[in-house]
Length: 104
Image (cartoon, rainbow, N blue to C red; front, side):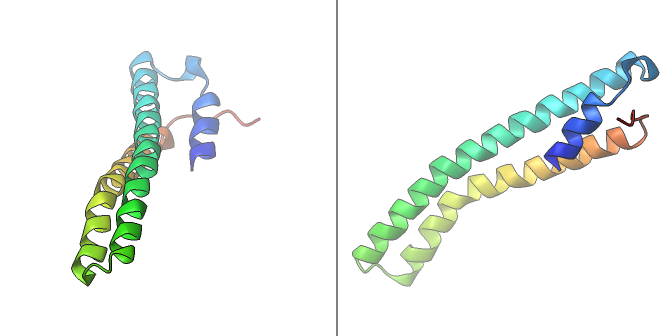
């Protein structure tokens, strides 16, 4: 989906799109890129912590609740970031759907 969004944004003839529409599309694109960056950072950090907690819980023979709940809680921010990224991608696709795209 990222490649499609980048191709769609770069294939927009700026003269055929109103400045307000172009501004909205670029704002959606920047928001989508920021959401992707946040998701990647959260996956690395929270995923690493979840793996560490799971390894410690397994080595200490912790209860099943500790082994499942702790990594789940640590993975929650990354899941929310992924949901936000998907929502922004859909919003950007909707804003690009009515715009003229130049075929290359």
